[in-house]
Image 1 (cartoon, rainbow, N blue to C red):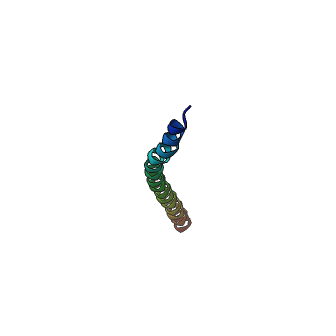
Image 2 (image 1 turned 180 degrees about the vertical axis):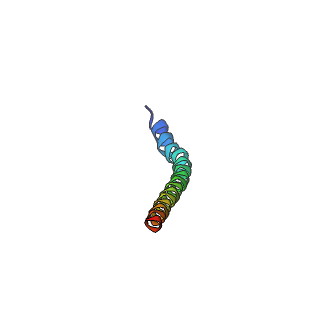
Image 3 (image 1 turned 135 degrees about the horizontal axis):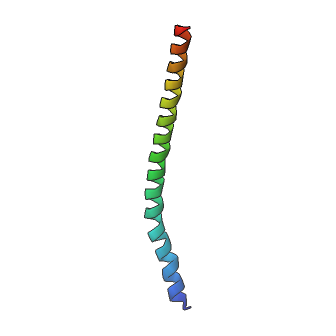
Length: 57
């Protein structure tokens, strides 16, 4: 391979991968927030169910 081709690859790969990695990071952050919210809702529902069971006994 010519050194020009290697230089072009070395310059092009970060330019192509940076936006893709940034978008993936944003989507990953949104997925993480959605999972956290779902887990919090699940915990609050379980606590509410346990309180209801204690009140009926």
